[in-house]
Image (cartoon, rainbow, N blue to C red; front, side, top):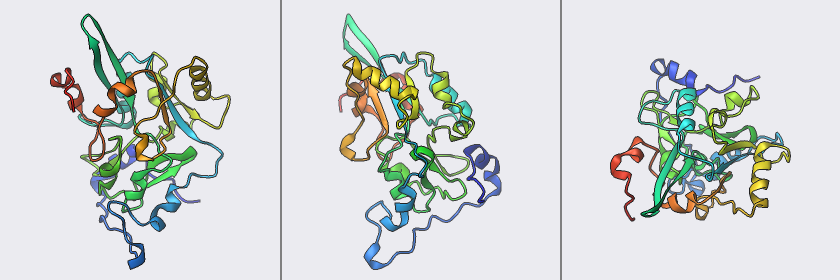
Amino acid sequence: MSDPPLTRREALRSAAALPLAAAASPSVGDDNEPQGPYQPESFWQDRMRSPDDGKRYGWFVDTRRCFGCHACEVSCKAENDVPLGHFIRQTFYKDVGRYPKVARVFLPMSCQHCEDAPCIKACPCGALHKTTGGTVAVDYDVCCGNANCVDVCPYGAIYIDPTAKQAVKCHNCYHREQADMAPACVSTCPSQALYFGDLNDPDSPITGAMNSACDDGVELVQLRTEKQTRPRMWFAGPAPAELERDLPSEGESYSGSAYDIYQWKSKPR
């Protein structure tokens, strides 16, 4: 049996002792060249396939319940040793309406664990792959820190760790999943706005929450569907429509600047 891939925590502990791999592209023939930022299909097609485990993990975010406490961010940073100034998940907010009828909407964001994940296609070292339930994860034994994945992610959900010099993103807390525990953010959310689970299981909490929202006549939406990534995250509530254009996109990552006082008043794009 092969050894399991390093966790992010283990990778950080050993980063100082491990030389970085060369960011080399796969060897291909003239008829199978990389297309733009993406590697040849023959290089990533196996890593794009989910394990045949019968599971299909996904997320449901009920923004109607989120009140912007940022507990999900704090628990995520603590669980995954995320350094200051970097985020695996982030809650974006925006003030809407006109005085005196003003409200603030909140949008918790993280990796969408896309069915057709562009980060897997762009990774030149073969580190990004799908694991249990279709989770898009990073193999820290292989990641070379090339950052192509950051350049192609439509949701700004990946950053390069300043110490390990490797890509970091949400991995659905797979170390907790192996212990039959929910992701840290889900367990911490006081308003029960975050749901994670097996979309193939009709009795899972995420399936029940999504069905309940639909029964109430609430539309479930996804972000940037025009990118054709087929994300596995659905949202309920007004926040996605209000905030979508303000979210990070290709070549960007979540950052503390989103909370800067100068961002309090939205600027038209």
